[in-house]
Image 1 (spheres, rainbow, N blue to C red):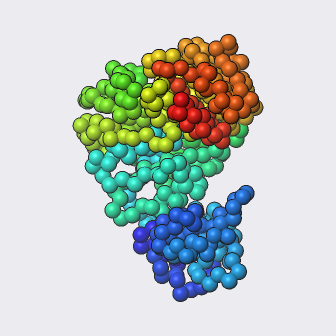
Image 2: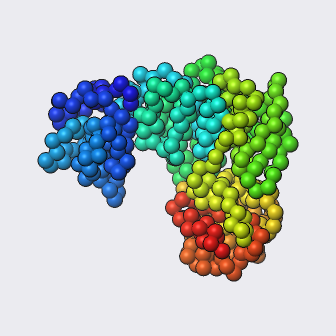
Image 3: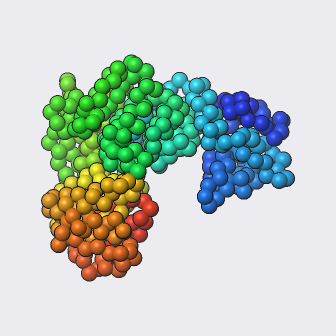
Length: 448
């Protein structure tokens, strides 16, 4: 938070300083893990179910924190603690005040599927001409967005900020902080239905973002998504997708080997071949979203193609691995019905026998069992040869897929059975919600 002091932070959140002689110190980044504190940072002491950040205030100071934001002063602590009734509310107020000092354009990225890939692709494209700050990893919520904003420095020319929500009103809070000039909506899908109810609810919650964009801003939407195709807004709207009615579209899609996707990017007045150095149809959409934002910033076709070619996948989001025995799509980071269907589509483009290893999709609400059955049916209809599942709800995957599916009560039982079911030359998709711990399954597949 360049040129933003402790006293400015205290004024923004109406907090009380435990001592006054630190108030003119300039703050660095917002940090919530004391082990990651760098000299000058603002450590925020969150109290969670298992860990209380207040217990690590001394450790944060010892690592060089300029100030700690807290709800209580630890006994004997004599360094600069900014005391507030609610650290979450205070953090949002501080981030909002710092954002008001910045003039750079922000691109906000939201949707039920593909946010992180789109964010990475947009940043890769814009980096061909600009100094870009992007959301690190998956820091996209009411804690992560203020952390991202705190990392914006004077040398940055544009920021790409991922905006994730799980309930109504959350987008309003983080959009107020991010204040994007452009927005990207990747897809409206079956995610967080426990809180949002249905697809209409997802659409309403995501589009809370729109009032925070200026009327001369840009809104990029997936034109192949029926909800987003029908979206009306005062801003300039750009539709991207595979259909001919889109403003930007992908033609002649070719999956080249196991780690490359080629297509022709087409728009009014332009046509350019592009290569994504990764595999999957979902990345074609991310590339289209990156291209749309690139065009909105004035980049040319060659710059956009170079940016797409520099894209790299993040963590366990569709990472392709040739183990020497089989081909693995490790997508064990998260799952909902739409992203699993997309993963199956990508799996079916690979050679060999097609095997899907799926765990529970979480936070789907009352209709969760039926959604699992529908995904199982989708796998069967698409021609998946073998479906291995584990988890309480994953039994419904197997019910939908029929005789080609096997259900295991535990993840460990599934892992133990892998040598029996998997064969040399298979193409294997591993996908589940993060809490199911299917990264262990992906690792076991790699060891075969």
